[in-house]
Image (tube, rainbow, N blue to C red; front, side):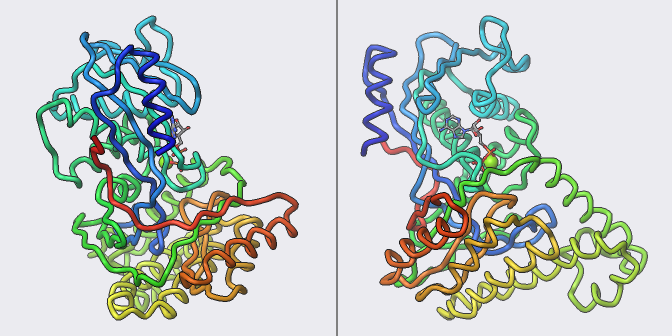
Length: 391
Ligand code: ADP
Ligand code: MG
C-alpha cells in the first residue's frame, strides 16, 4: 500500500533501519445519532477504510522522536517534557504533536508503560472534515505503545484513553464516539453504542449498500465555540426540565411525550436544541430493529429527518452541506443523506445502492460543483476494522 511504503521509506531514511511495526487506526463516519453522545444517547457510527498509519520501533533512549509525514515536521519529547507540553529544547509542542504526546500522558496517568518511540506517521483521512482524523491519530499511537509496552487493553479502554488525551491534554471537549469507532470498528458492520452505559454491539449493513462520504471542502470555523454553546443549551434544558421531571439526568431520560408536555417552559432556543436531541435519540432507538430487518428505506428516511433537524433545530448545518444533501436525495439509488460530524462544514454521509454508487458519486460531484463553483471530494467507503497492528 502506497501510504505504508511512504512512511516506511521516510522511517528508513530518518532512523537508518526498517520500522519493526506498522499500526493503523481508521477514521469514522456516523450514520445516525448526531450531537447526542454528550447527552447520553445512542450513536451509530462505522469505522471507515481511511486511516492513520504509523511505522514505529522502540527507541534506544527514553525520548520519543516523531515525524508527521503529511506536514513534513518532527517532534522530540520525553516523559519529563510531557507535563510541560514542550519539546526537548523547551519550545512548545506543535499542535499536531499534542495528540501523540497526549496519548503518552494518558497512558502514563493510568500506569501503563510507554517506551521511547521512533515513529513516522501519515493519514489518508481529510483533516478537520468530521471524519475524526484526530481520534485515528490517538488510537494509532495507543496501538504502537501497547505493542512495545507488554500490556494489553480492551478496545473500549483504548477508546477512553484516547478521549482522555483529547479532552484533557489537547483540550478539545469531544464525546466518546470518535475514539470508540476508531478503536472498536468491525468490517462490514455498523456499531451501535449506548453513550451512557458504553455497552455496544454491531449491526449488519446489507452487502448491496454502499456508504458514500461527500466532503464539501468547507472547513469548520468557530466550531468549538458553537459546539460548547450547544452543549450548554442541552445542560440548561435538563436543569429547567428537572422542575417537572425531577428524575432526569440528561436529555436521554426525556421521552418525546414528556418533552412536548414540558417544552413550553424552556426559552425558545434551548427548546429547539433540546428537541433535536430528544427526537434524534428516539430515531436512533428505532434504527437497530430497522437495520436488523434490512429495512434500509425506512432507515434512510431517518437519516433525511436527522439532517432537517440538524439544519433547523440544532442549527449546525451550512449552505454547502444543505446543497450536498439536497442533490444527493434527488439521485437514483440514494436511501438517505445527511451532514455528519459536528457540522458547519465537512462531510455528508449517504447510503446508496451498491450498483448506483459510482454514478451517484459522479452526479453528486457534478451537481455540487455546478451550484457552488468548486469540486467536492467523494469517497465510496466500507465499514472497516478498528485500530490494529498490521505488522
Ligand atoms: P477531525 O474532525 O479530522 O478529527 P480535528 O480538528 O479534531 O479534526 O483534528 C485535526 C487535528 O488532528 C489536526 O489539526 C492535527 O493536529 C491532527 N492530525 C490529524 N491528521 C493528522 C496527520 N495526518 N498527521 C498529523 N496530525 C494529524
Ligand atoms: Mg477530531
